[in-house]
Length: 193
Length: 287
Image (cartoon, rainbow over all chains, first blue to last red):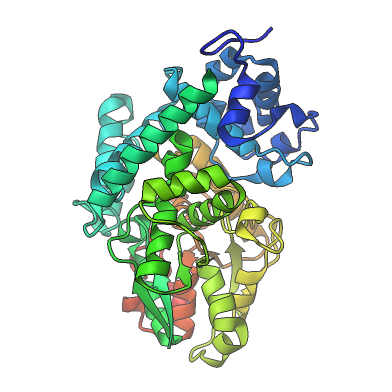
């Protein structure tokens, strides 16, 4: 059974192939990706299962688990795959689908981190870490005391800046973000039809 | 003096100022002139490639266009391993995909035509300066300090992008520290992941990953760890208090940037190498 995305004839593996040119059907489940994955043990699914679910068009299974939000992009899977599948690139594409179709699960704080991170560098031209941390703490009040002492120590040692790094070309950043978002939107809309 | 464009990246202006300071001061001492890219912007990091492939390629390409067209240089030093990965990935993807290349040119507003070599921190010392030349400049050699060279993920992977010779067991950083009088230990976690930015929200995962790396370094005889990535250094250095909470017998292992080790061997004053920025004290191994 395949899970449809925008239209019944659009299956998951095809969507991913159109995004990054990665062909998930080449996977024969040797599980080398899983054997080398640093975070496979911390989620319900492991990389080979994610790739299998992509082949089966089972987006629901993938989105119900937090694996794609634990993937650090370490590239071990993509480096070792005997079929030369960019497995880490599949995780990127799945994150994009999750953001696009509002499928981010509740237990995936990393999704928020990615969003605040992108908002921050788009706004300032450079990443403003204190703003990112503050937004994350506000959105996850339960985490307020996590790493509190570490944060204090890092501020004391001058490792977290109070103000954004200046000097970046903010006008060029704004222009590039607008152009990239417009072109990617057109491309993704065009390739889904 | 050889001139090299310099892209510090966001981390070197915040959590890793000691990497920025020590890299700049060592390059100067080694006869490399670093010229910072004017108005450099964020490389996009993990957020860009998780959200918009085109933006992820265009942000580094924009910097490379500045290096080639505005600065008239053909090589850029990108010491942060995460930025280095975004730069080399952009170079690789644009070379492989004509449509992406056209889109990148539209986003950047000027044609990106390649032709700029991207060097990470280890490359600068190993290839830009050279092991023999480095050895000749050593003023204060380490007396056989046992160092575990930790490459992490992005200096070597994926090799088709980074062009690393031996991505599963790299040795260039080992050759650099050996040139300084250190003894590089053989160990098993050279290229295992530290958890990177999961440190911001999945602390348990990062504590477990860093514990395994540090434990193996210690078991293999290391007295210090050398890193060339701000995420790796911060995770390995800051998580040792958490590790000690569950393991009271934990003996802390200093985690240094390669540039700090190079600086100490060149005889540069510790105050200029940011040696007081560490959570685990480094004074004993850097004396």
